[in-house]
Length: 93
Image 1: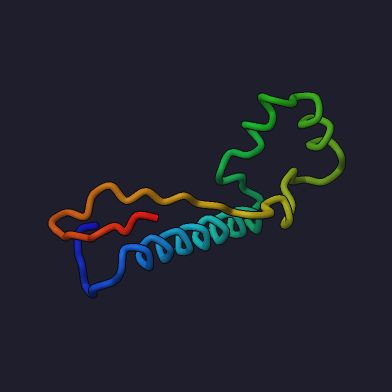
Image 2: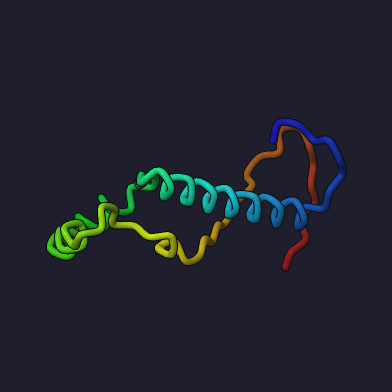
């Protein structure tokens, strides 16, 4: 963090960051899907693990191997390591 505009509890900040990143990842995926682009290189990674299945899916008649429902859930784990000059008291859980 470079700037602290308002005082906010550490837990709320952590939750907001996680939620914001999850939304942005989903938005990027949907934008890429609309443009028929694999922005997260899902196909390349899957291809390395399952090349035969990848070619079968790629040649199945659909021009794009991802679907709108290919991304089922986004789970982000945020770790805040540095707040610049700002101090937060982290409560132990």
